[in-house]
Length: 328
Image (cartoon, rainbow, N blue to C red; front, side):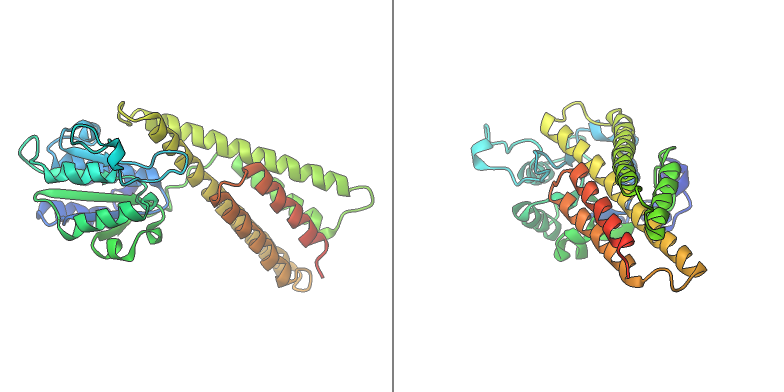
């Protein structure tokens, strides 16, 4: 069966899939494959489809194959750990550790064929894990193929990226849109419009309450998108996942949707500002737009440091209120 027949229909005509398919057919896939893009679920589906092809299995059963090894972030910090000596039992490194993965790849294949490893959210490797993985890329085990999946490729070591074949998976069709998101963005645009006009007497409190409403609905939309995606992924996750690994997967899903929605907020802010400026070039100072985008970027950075989402959004909306009503 062709690879293109096992991936989402939206990806069947994309160049990356065709190149991967030709590489498989010509037995020239390479040792290290880096799959990156905005849609984490698409990246997983492609990696697991190729793994099934290499192992003579299928996408749905690849992860349960005895010669398929996986590595995922774990713990509250969501890191891919090296594996400590204190956790070693009967000569075996702990499950879901880089040292265990490297050791498994060095062994003879259970089925006598290829061995496949998939590193999920590869950008979460700590320094020790990244260096251990780099050595594996430099001195690959025989008949082995390693997949790295990440939405943040530039968080990987340059030396790791340079030793892998890089494939960017398109994102145009990857965004999952909540049915209420269009309504939310229109309410956000209406709110910006009221700020730009300037609050009338007695309306300041109304604008503040509206900001809190936008904040609350944003969180609800993100939560519902994350929960839907989590339920979809549960059917394909190995039963052997630990509680720490499941927690890390859930946090990763929330992080991806948060990034998606905040990116949409930035686009809406810029688009609305340009629409207003097109109607009246003197109405909207560029400085105000720059301040608003800088505020949103600051919120994004805080969230990467595990800052509370509600507090971070509140900060952005209140700063926006000040920026747009106090523009000069």
